[in-house]
Amino acid sequence: MRRPVDQHRPRDLKGRQHTMKPGDELRTLRTTPDKYLTVRYAGASGDFNPIHIDEEFARQVGLPGKILHGLWTMAQVARAQTEAGGGPHALKRLEVQFRGMGLPEQEIAVRSTVREVREADGVAIVDTVAEQAGNQIIRNAVAELDVT
Amino acid sequence: MSVDTTAVGKSYPSTTYAVGREKVREYAFATGETDALHLDVGAARKAGYADVVAPPMFCVVYSAPAIAPAILDPEVGIDFALMVHGAQEFRWGPLVVAGDEVTTQVSVESIDERDGRGFYVFRSTTTNQRDETVCVGRWTNIVRAT
Image (cartoon, helix red, strand yellow):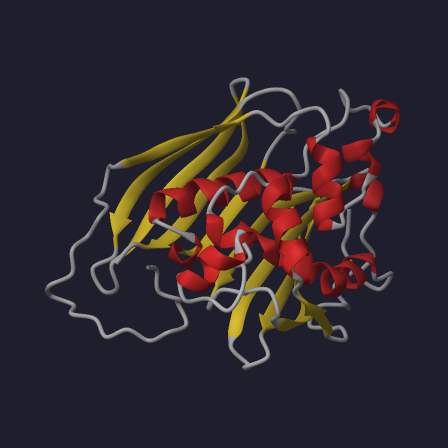
C-alpha cells in the first residue's frame, strides 16, 4: 500500500535506506509514438497547434511533418522517473530544455543517471535526456526524486 | 532585436480547474502511463487516495487556462511565428487527484535579451482546495531574431 504524499510521515534520518546511489542508471524508457499519438495528446492536453496534428500545415511552415508536442516528450521523461522512483509521489521537480523536434513513428529513449543523493533529505538528483534517432530532443534535464 | 520589458511582474486573473476522473484517465492513456493509480479508482483508493491520481505532468492541463492568456498578452508582445518553447520546470507538492479543484495564478517573471534572442519567462503557481501548493511552473519561451 502506497502512502499519499500529503500525509505526514515521521522519518528516521539515520536509519533511512537509500534505494539509489550516485552513478546508478535508471531503467531506460523506450516508447514509439504512433501516427495518431499527437491527435490523442492534443485532445488530452488541449494543445491543438496545427504543427502537431496537420501534416500539410506542418510542411507548409517548413517542418518535416507533424512534430511531437514538447510537453508530451517531457511527460515521457517524467514517466521514466516515476516508474523508477516507485510512483507519481516520488517526482518532486523536473527541469528540461527542449531541443530539435520529436517526430511520430520513431523510437524515443529516455536515459537517466543518478548524479547525487542529497544527504539532508535523501532526494536523488537525476540527470536525464530523451533521444530520438541520435538527437537529444530533451537535454540538460534534471529530476529530483524522493526515494526515501 | 530589442525586447520590451514593461510586462515584467504583471500577473493575470487566476483560473480554477475541476479535475475530472475521465480527464485524468484520458491524459494517462495519451502519455503511456500504466500505473493503476492513474487509471483504476479501486487501485487508487486501496493505496489511500480519494480517487485516480493525476500524473505529475497533468499540471500542463490544469495550468493551461491560466498560462495561455499570459503568453498571448499583446503587452508581453511575443512574436509567435518566431517563438519556440525553450525550457520548462515544474516543482510538485501533494499529488492532485480527481475531484480536486485547483487554482492557478500566472505572472511574467522575466523578459531578457540574450544572444539576439528574447527570453520570456512565466511563472505559474497552483494551489488545491486546501490551499496547498501542488505545482509551481516556470515556462520559458524563446523568440529568435527576425
